Image 1 (cartoon, one colour):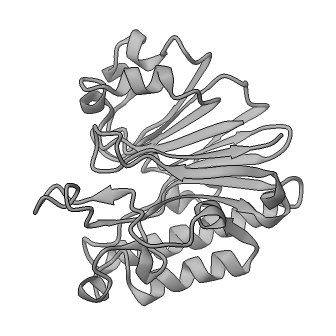
Image 2 (cartoon, rainbow, N blue to C red):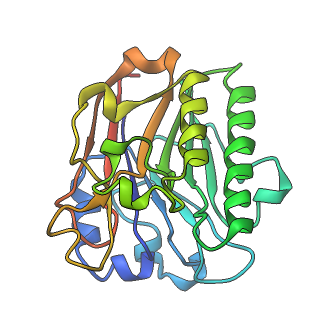
Length: 255
């Protein structure tokens, strides 16, 4: 199964670019999008239900339009689709889609950004813990695959300027420590299974020619629970695909 994840930074914006060409040609079984910033009733049927995929699922913010949101386009039909996390504190911002397949639970998640203020950072850390608790409960039944925008760079090689950003949310010690805890719980960063070097990023600021200069951050990930690790065939980043301040990432799993 080939699975993609992409923070598109506005679905209505990206479909005006080359998104449909990429979507039709990417060869994915599942495409997971984050930060769609749209309710399905704001998108025409042709764009909401692309021909190259049999199923589409959406979760949008119940707080305000034009904010957050995730979507999944799939060909293999899931056994079940669940919207949001069980913890009601983290259900209203349209951040989670959970697709259950025979071999694993698949999560598409747009994790919160903590840069606005301390309250949002606290919300982000609580969201992280609520997700991990839920994943660990589900993991008792079958393995976990989670992809999306985690909004945290894990190590110094995961961003261009680690020292300059050491006090900025997205690279704070507490955020990085949570990723350490996640990995210690038995979750594997699939990209690092195949590439241990620097200069591989998935997000670039629109300012200062950051993308042209490859001054970016790797904050988009696919993790698998370690019992699925041997089934991971490859994992990759597609930095040359434009249309958003993020680029697509992919994983292939032998199921």
